Length: 416
Ligand code: AMP
Ligand code: GLY
Image (cartoon, rainbow, N blue to C red; front, side):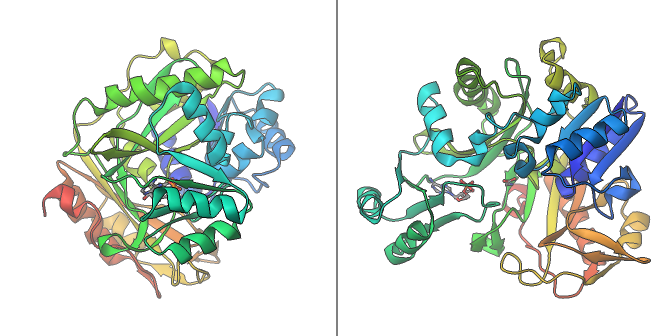
């Protein structure tokens, strides 16, 4: 099978790594990719938001499957363009991707499907904003309706800050605060059959102890030793399957990766958000534990034949990933800094620990930073403590001027 992966972050590096290890995959391409992905896939320049360009590239490469990593191309309808060219594509249509692209749409689907989520108001005027803030009280949860790379959400006790953020958005969702730990659960679906993956937890705040601003994600681990073993079955039954059924019922079937961001509250599981693609950095740890070869499952999802797939199987191991971010992330990150120490990780820590590239590019012989999140250092072990030790040992070998990372990824869960 010839596979083309669209995107160029650590999630796509994790996807390409898994696909490169899959005996079914005879050729692996990625566009636009990054300096790390270049080691496992052939890179091609492309404007990932241009459906005709992506479909054209897939045609030239005679790809049997296109896998779209990030949300922006999905929301722009790139999967539709690829499918219209007759090429199987893993990723939802533009219509179905609104589940991620519009928080108001997601709330409407959840209401239709009877999926438990925070009560909310969609507001467009200052009066509506004040009424909603008053109705819920502190802590305030204020979400820009559109795509904002995880940075459009403000959770604060300060009503002035909540109001200011709400007024800066064209359309805003204001909702009830959900307490309790967060879980990310992904499912692969063809629009009818739903195959859940294994749960993971990510760390969204920039600083240790869940302090600082929200980011795209600073680290993740899997499995979750503290979670109820019945969690996956419960979420499949109350969240994932009803949502997929509702979107099919509406005439906009969702095929691809359905990502449920959940809060395990004192009153039960609630959906915080849906995403329409693999989560980053959770994908790095989920795929590290996946035993089933990935390509055929993704192809079956793309072709609507997922019912022929047996349940996914998992390694009995733990995985931890720690994100190394640039100076000043998530503000205006500094880029162009040289990264060294990658060979040492490859020599001393492989195969248990490895570096997945997020925002990197080649500059002559050097690898330099090219984005906010630069690297996602991933490790496996018999348990979380071992995976964590290995991940941080590898992080310690990587040098990037001004970089930052959290030191407490998976610490509580590992009991260390
Ligand atoms: P979202 O982009 O919707 O995932 O929100 C980003 C982060 O904001 C989530 O991962 C949560 O940590 C936090 N958050 C979002 N909605 C709520 C809520 N209703 N209650 C508490 N925290 C929330
Ligand atoms: N881990 C958060 C996200 O992918 O949106």
